[in-house]
Image 1 (cartoon, rainbow, N blue to C red):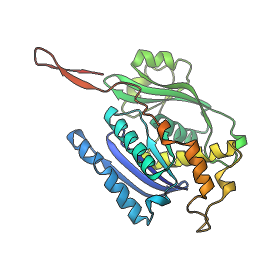
Image 2 (image 1 turned 60 degrees about the vertical axis):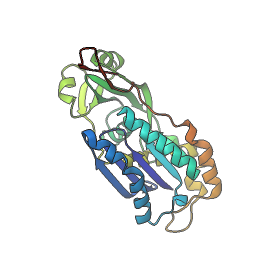
Image 3 (image 1 turned 90 degrees about the vertical axis):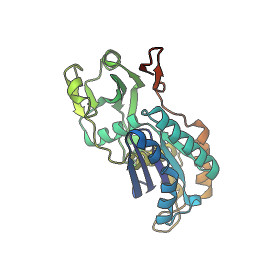
Image 4 (image 1 turned 45 degrees about the vertical axis):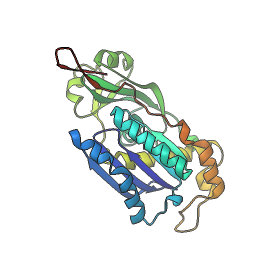
Length: 277
């Protein structure tokens, strides 16, 4: 299965091409301040260039995976609108992957002794994005290489008091490096640092591939049983499988995970700027 994955929700634009769970090509454009918009404009040209380098036609893609947030309001909007437009134009299935889910899945892989945990990301100006997860029995999906997780506390955002109330029953908080020191002393839980995801788009693509496989297993029609072209055991999916994916992952259902409103700067009658959400 050939996957195009990209994310523009934070201070970088990340893109990856994957064949199943193997990264074929990836790009990362780091931006700051006023350079952010310039980096976002590189998204579509970079995708075209990567496809050309991989000798993939757009028609050879099987799935698009996009980061839906949380993160920058504008960045999330750009990512989702671009992904939906591409999926509609190319008649491709589209799946959205949250940043919280990416970190949770990676943490579950490397921390085998964590039956439950929370993921906490800095949202700026004293706000946080967070969610809780627990591991569940995945014996029914033994062919899938990922650890099965169930959401315990749905993704949300809030200040420190909100965080402490919502995650009161969580024994472990996985926190980004910018917040781990401040939260370690007030959480009442064990604080661990979030795993490094150098290119979010690459892991998004891996997670999307695994979710598709799980979905097919649940429907008793896994991708492994439907088969692919014989070129190195990989290649374009059969037509009936592509149609099934389009039905399971329509582009219209992918929505942004904003969790909070856009940050805007207002000027009062005194001429002073005030930030609001």
